Each structure stands twice: as C-alpha cells, then as structure tokens.
Image: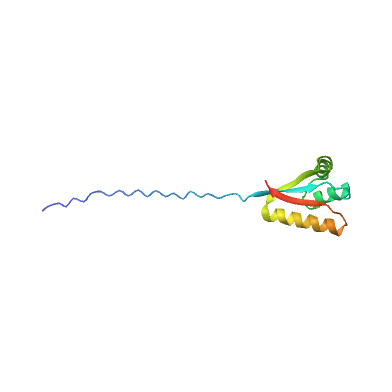
Length: 105
C-alpha cells in the first residue's frame, strides 16, 4: 500500500477592509458689518440661529463691528446653507440688510 502524500495547504486570507470615511467639507458662515443693522439684532441672530451664549454673541458682534466681518460658525455644507438662508430671511423680514455668506473652511 502506498501512502499518498498531499501537500499541506495553508491559506492565509488577508482582509484589507480599511474603511476610510472622509469628513464632509466644512464651511464658515460669515456675518458682515453694515451701517444699518443694529448691534442688538446681530446679537439676537447669533443667540437664536447660531446658539451662542449672550456673552459669546456680544463678543462676536463687536468683532464684526470692528473688523468688518466675523465667523458665526463652521458647519457641514447643508447646515451652512440653511443658516445663511435663515439669517437672510429673518434680517429682511426685520428690515435689515445684514449680509451673511459661507466659504470653505
């Protein structure tokens, strides 16, 4: 009787399931100074739309007033677009020309 020799087969399965989840691009929402929008209105916008504390909102309002613009927040694109639209609508409804834009962070 002859013994059949079978080579030992060792299989190594290398799983490369390296998941690369990319963070969505972020956008800065900017408020701009103008001669007509009241400081109080800007503070209200920062508190109600951007959820800043009264102190944070006041500090940011002064930055916008002194430097011409300030970053209200950094958000994913869809959220930034919504914030820009919301602020613009509220400002126009209240008779203010407050300019708000977004740009890539």
